[in-house]
Length: 279
Image 1: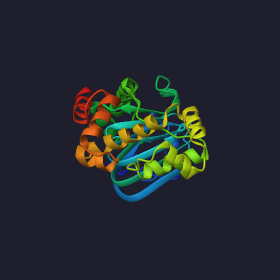
Image 2: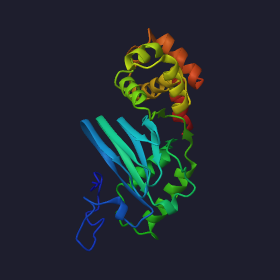
Image 3: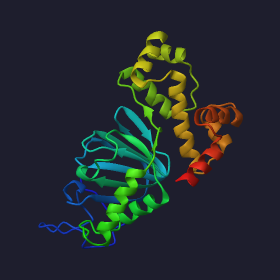
Image 4: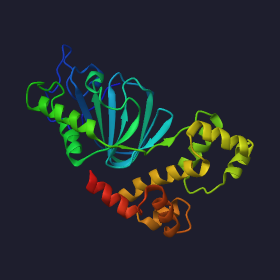
């Protein structure tokens, strides 16, 4: 599929024998350590179906709702975090709303020190600016020039990015996937595992065992993980703790803050403030 560089400044960024320029190209075909695309878009919903790249990919979200499914997990990417997808790993990506997202493609040979599994990385302000700058570099940048040195610094910074446990394990079992999809569509649903067992026509004990086996989590912990990811995204977009709590089905802000503090060790405002300061 073709990719478009929304921030492209250099009209002669990539000219091949066929006259293809940087406005429409395949990152897989670019013989450089890194290739970056991205920018802002408004969409009611768009999905890139299951696919894979030879190159590793980093999906950085600065604004909006971006979800990736890969490695038997859904990665609801909080702003100023990024999902790292190793090369050749199948995945899908969906976007909704007013989105600002950047994708970095990395040659496997230059990413040997980076994780070999899908994960969420915290992105420092420096790394964020380097990725955004990379979208404005010529696609065929001079390896020995300034842009080539910046690409090397970018990869060095990427290798230092802390890994966050910010994923929602996605089961393989068809009924559990139906349950997961329903919870993501309506996170305020407070149905118990017995309620879900009845809806899915499965014994509660069987549902519990299957969920534990496929996700490594109890039902309560699994749903809590979804709530934490959803909350981080909405809070970073400016929603109040009270509104987030109600949207997630809590009786009020106090119950939500208690859950958040137990899970992450800090109340939401402090967690977000400390995290921004740390990166």
